[in-house]
Length: 197
Image (cartoon, rainbow, N blue to C red; front, side, top):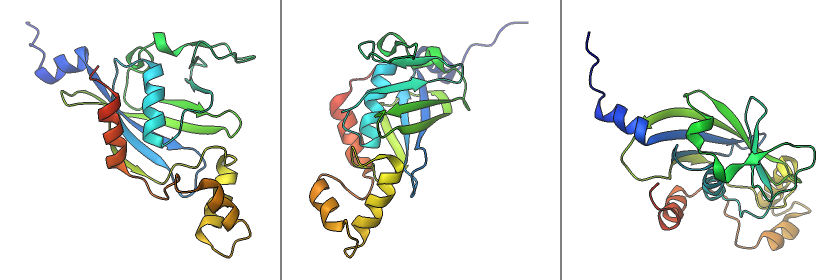
C-alpha cells in the first residue's frame, strides 16, 4: 500500500501551522474577548505582544503564560518569587500546543490580575498574512482600574452621569479609553508592527 501525497493544506500545516485562538478576559461583564490568527512559529514572547495589541493593553505590567501541566513561560528578566518559569522568547507556540481544543492561561498585571483564558479553536495551514484579528467583543478595561471588580464600577460610573464617581473616572481616563472594540484598528497595528513569520 502506497502512502498518499500530502495535500497543499497539509504541507502548509506542517511547515507553517496557523492557530486560531479565542482569548477571553475571565470574569469581565459585559464579556471581553478576541479571536486572533497567529503562526505557530511565533515565540511565546511574540504571542504576548500580539495579545497586548488585540486586547488593548499597554504592556505596562508583568505577565505570564500558564499551561495545564503547570509549566509557566514569561520574560526571563522577570524575578517571579516561588514560580519556576521558562524563557518565553525561546519557545514557539507550536511546541507547547499541538491540538485544537487545548487551553492555556495568560495573566497580565499581577496586581489587577487580568486572567485570560485562551482556547485553540483550530490549527490549519494558511498562506494569508498573520497575525490578524477576526472577531471580538467588549472594550479593554483601562490599565490600573482595579481588576474585574474595579472595571464593573468604572463601567457603571461612566454610563451614569449621576454616579458619584462619574466625573472622577471621566477625568482620569480622558479620551484614551474607548467604550467599544475596533477590530480594524487592531489589524492596522498588526500590519504595521509584525512582519510575516
